[in-house]
Length: 440
Image (cartoon, rainbow, N blue to C red):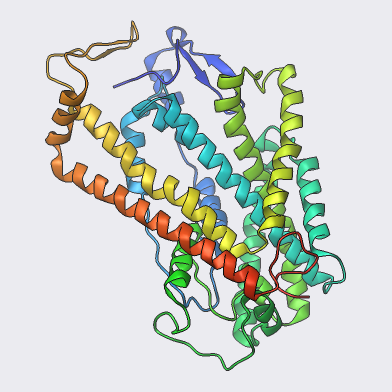
C-alpha cells in the first residue's frame, strides 16, 4: 500500500532538492522499469560495503581475547523496507522509515543520531590519522597538531557536494584496504607485538604472550562489555598487545610506516564520505524543513553548505582531541548511536509497522492515493490493541528485542565511561595532549 512520505506529490532528492513526479506522462511499464533500476544494488556496491565498512578489518584484533560476537538486525530492516517502499513514495534514508511508521519527530531523532554517529566516526579517523603520522615521525611532532592538520584537510576537501567525484577514489580504497589487511596479517604472524605501543596505550608491560579460550582473568566485566561494543562497531575485541587500529601494532618500523602511509589515504577517503553523508542527512532532511535552508541544488544553497562543513570538522576535531582513545571512543559511539540504529530502532520500527498494518479492518478503504486521505473506523488504544493481538508472538519477540538492546546500550555506555576514566588515570591517554596515545 502506497503511503506518502511528503506532502503533495514530491520527493526529496539526495542533494536536498525536491522533484515533482510526472507519472501521468509515462507508462506503467516504464515507471516500473525505472523503479527497479533505482533499487538494484550492483555487485560492485555490495562488495565495496562488505570490504570497507561491514567487516571493519582495522579493528579486528590479532588476538581477540575480550569478546567476539556479532549479529544483525538487517532482516528486520529488509522486511520493513520491502513493505513500505514504493516507486511513487520511495524510502531514501533511514529517517524516512521512522517518518513512515511514526511521525516527523521520529525522523528528526533518527537523522540526528545518525549524524552524531558519523561525526564521531570522523573524529575517530582524525585520531587514527594523527597516530599514523606520529608513528611515521617517531613522535617528533606534537600529536594534537597532527590531528589538527587532518581536521583542516577535511574542512578544505569536505565541501564537495556530490559523491560522484569521490567514486573512483572509493574504488581505489577497496584494494588499498585489502593490501593493508594482507600486510598486517603477514607481518603480525612473523614478528613480535609492538610492546612499546601496548605499554603506552594499554599499560601492558612486555610479558610472554598467552592465549586463552575465553577472556583472560584480568579482563573484568567492563572490559568484556567494551569488547561487545567493539563487536557492534565492527567484529573486534582486543588483547594486551593489540592496538586499535590493528596495523599500528606492527613492530617492524619499515612495515609500520608502509601501512600507515597507505592508511592515510584510505581513511581520509572514508572521512570525506562520512562527513559528506552526515552533513547531507542533517541539511537535506532537517535544516531545510525546520529552518528553511535553501536546497543544495540551488546556488543559494552553496554558501550555507560551505559554512557548515568547517563547523562539522571542527566539532569532530574537538571530539578527537578530548577523547584520544580510539577503542573507548568507538565503543561509546557504538553504545550511544550504532547499537540504537542497528538493534533498538529496528524492532521498534517493525513493531509499529506490524501493529498499524494488522489494525486495518476488512472493508475499509484505508489510504486513497488520489486524494491523500486515510479512512479509519477507530483510533487510539483500541486500534493499537487490535493490531498487537493479530501477531502476538512476533510482536512479543520485537518487544523483547528492544528491551535487550536498551539494556545492552546502558551497560555499554557505563563500561565505556569507566574505560575512559581508567585510560586517563592509568595510561598516557589524555585530552588535548602532545603525547601520542600509542607512544612514539
